[in-house]
Length: 286
Image (cartoon, rainbow, N blue to C red):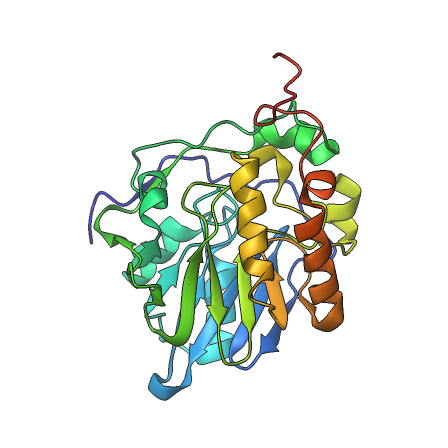
């Protein structure tokens, strides 16, 4: 086992949850999602090889929950062929170190995200000054330090293919983070969007707890580049997905998804971009 694999962040339980925590269901053929407190992860089956791939790695302290779900879905002693990370924020890599130590499988990320999972760079601190609800104000409690996956961290193939998943492609959707990616299956137009957009207003404590459904932009307190985030939403809307699972909130499908995503794409500045914050043109200290 590579001794460089380590977690530089505190693995203490983060006291944030929603009423859907623990939900697990199949949203498309062979695509399962699980809600862990406030974030979603996905398990994607590879039927031709009796295998599977994990997308994202949940909240700190959730490794046992993830492994139990994997065993229930795919049987005992069947580790994934690999792990794909949409990005490296704490709520998407919370269990990654424990899972890699247990499974010893590669973890694929965009090249621009690699420094954040190899211990080289920390993300900017969460922006408590941003316009938004109580979660935004509480965001400084969220860790921003990198994990270090050592030799297990791999660059996702430049040709757009997704390791282990035939028929899927990855799409660079920066803005929330520099190397954020989304995954798309062409034949049934299934989209795993990460935090490129979400289906709950993630800065609002009430909305997060109740999981009030609405298609919104990426979480405000962690989004670094709003112009890139806008272009990423347009890119995903142009795919005309039939069903989408995002990093936060319940899955959307059909007209509810297409209408909501089209509205977000057209009115991104009004819906998603905060009136002020560290990464807007209207920062209160400017």
